[in-house]
Structures are given as structure tokens and as C-alpha cells.
Length: 394
Ligand SMILES: Cc1cc2nc3c(=O)[nH]c(=O)nc-3n(C[C@H](O)[C@H](O)[C@H](O)COP(=O)(O)OP(=O)(O)OC[C@H]3O[C@@H](n4cnc5c(N)ncnc54)[C@H](O)[C@@H]3O)c2cc1C
Image (cartoon, rainbow, N blue to C red; front, side, top):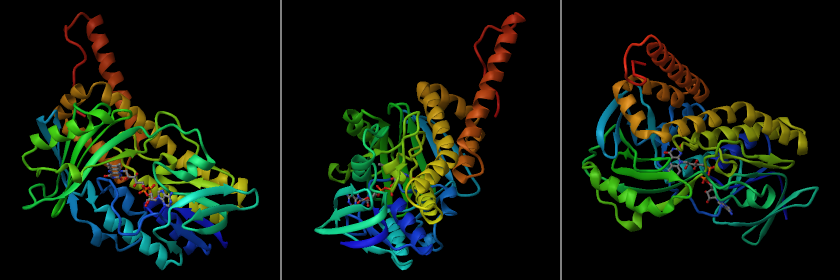
């Protein structure tokens, strides 16, 4: 048995970030992953601008495309576009990005064990014991960073709701770079979700996300989206991968107990509106590491972590969940509304840039709807006009 301060299970963005930050703070850390890196990960690979400030320096060389233009469609028709002077997103390939982040953890002094699937995690009271590949690791804290189907969560924080979305995606070669700096986003045919095409230089990532359980229609929705986008290559069935998007419902999901902290997808920390999870994985990885480094261990560390997630992450995810519910109740109406005032989408870009929050965005949507409704009622009371609420500029 080998002893550590912390064993981190899973070397995705959440686990590698937590492990690196801990090692930089002087902790003895072991990072275990069932895969050997570079490994594939079903993901669009879009990094929001706000993610960048939480990454180690040098990530720029991994960016395959800067997104400055987004084309929005409703059932592949009625297009309108939004153009931004500064990048709205930075596109990476997850095999490359995750291998690079894991290497930064190794560089910081983390012992990395790849190709070792964790089979059991036990809380013995005094220590946490992790068994993987015939080896036994013991630590005072385990960080569960093992993704949406987390074994650490299932064993030590069970009775969790399922992930909110299922997605199907493919990352395939693309000749001629027809998308360049443009992302395509289609709504209306994907209950609770959307379809996307993200440029990656000589590759393109195409996907469809729907509310869970909705897996049955996924392949048909994906095929219809690809067939209707002239810029996209044909995507063979063998390239397509299905995976959960670990966004929460409308309520927070418990993320810790004494000696056990969950981060990233294992803690259901993905955006319920867009499905963005890398930002929250990296954020929660850092928050977990800082709770361990500052806490006295056990309950105190768990409370510290729970408080920081509650204060710094959940308000935004809950607001994003409400934005998603509002949007998906009437996607046709919202698409039409936004096509009349595409400038208002700069507010969502502001959230991705970290200049605004979903909570602020939700407040402004409610204020505007209130103002419109008030105007409509006043008109009705004054006997003018016969139409319903009208739309004006953002
Ligand atoms: C189709 C799709 C598209 C997405 N697109 C985007 C996007 O464009 N932008 C964005 O920000 N987010 C996106 N997301 C969400 C994003 O992929 C996740 O939120 C993010 O990967 C979470 O990181 P993580 O480190 O928590 O988990 P993961 O990246 O899933 O890493 C978990 C790691 O744990 C390891 N592991 C699992 N079980 C074990 C075990 N028993 N023993 C040892 N190791 C184990 C795995 O091998 C893996 O390396 C998308 C998700 C999906 C499914």
C-alpha cells in the first residue's frame, strides 16, 4: 500500500487541475486514470474565454481555431449570425488538451498512474483506500474526478440524479476548412438541447445534445443535421460516440462529504443551457485543491469546498438551468426574437467571457419580459392595439 495526502481518480481537466494545484501547494498526490493518454473524449472541445484564466500558460499552442462568428438556425432554416471582434471560443481537441493538462500535473510533481481502472474506493474511517490495477493507494482525501459515470460518487456519495443530457458527437477530418472561424448552432429539433458544428482546423466536431432520457432519437437527429449543412462532411456511424452531459437539473447536487470531494462532471458541474463543462471542471478542480490545502482535513475541508462551490458555482448553474427552461419551452419564438435583435446574444457571449453571469442575464431577461408585458397590458387598458407582446431592441 502506498500512502498519499490525496488520491485523485480521473485525469480529465478537473482531475489534472486539482492534482497540479495540490502538488504546487506541497501535497503528495497520486493521479490515477483508466486510460492511457492521449485518449479520446467525446466533447465539442470549445473553451469559453473565461476558462483561459484558469489554465496554465502555454495552452495557446493547442488552440486549433478561434471562433469569431456563430450562425444560428431553426431546424436548419431561418439563419442569422453573430460576429464578434474578439474570440467567443477557443477550439481544442480533447485528446491533445487533456494529455497536455495531465503532463502539466506530472511536471508539478504529481505521480500519474495511467491505464489503471479504479475498481473500489473504501472509506475505512481513518483513511480512504483506492484499488486499481492490483495496487492499493491510501490517502486522507480522495478527489473523484472520474467523469459523468463516476465510480467514486456511486460508492461514496450514492443516490444521485442522472445527468441531464445525452449527446452524440463525432470529430472527423475536414478538407478545405469551410467553417474557418464559424460555429453552426441549430435548435428546434432536439428536445431540451441543440446541434452544433465546431471548427478545428483540419477537423470538425459535430454533435447533438438532447434532454435525458432522449437517446432514441439521437442518431436520426444527428443524421438530419449533418445532411442539411452543406459545409459538413458525411460522418460514418463508426465515428459517432454517445456520452452523457453531466449538467444538473434545477437543484444543486451534493459534491462532498468528509474526506471525499467530487469535481467536474462527477459533481454534475456542467452548464445546463450550453453543456459547457470544461470551465466548471477546471474551476472546481482548483476550488477542491484549495479547500484541501487550506483546510484541516475531514469535515472542515469538506465544508470549505461545499461553501465555495455553493457560492461561486451553483448560482450560475441554477440560473443557466432557468435560462434553458425558458428557451426550450419556446425555441421557435426565441430563435425569431433573437434573429430580430442578434446583438442581445452578446450577453451570452459576455457570460462565456466571464464579464457577466447567468444570474445577471436571467435578471435582465425577466426585466425585459416584465417591461414588454407591462407595455402590452397598458396598451390593452388604454384600448390601443390588438396584438400580443411585441419585440423591441435589446
Ligand atoms: C458530446 C459532448 C460535447 C461536449 N462539448 C463540450 C464543449 O464543447 N465545451 C465544454 O466546455 N464542455 C463540453 N462538454 C462537457 C465536457 O466534456 C465535460 O464537462 C468535461 O470533460 C468534464 O471534465 P472532467 O475532468 O470532470 O471529466 P472527464 O473529462 O470525463 O474525465 C474523467 C476521466 O476519468 C477517467 N475515469 C473514469 N472512470 C475511471 C475509473 N474507474 N478509474 C480511473 N479513471 C477513470 C476517464 O478515463 C477520464 O479520463 C461536452 C460533453 C459531451 C458529452
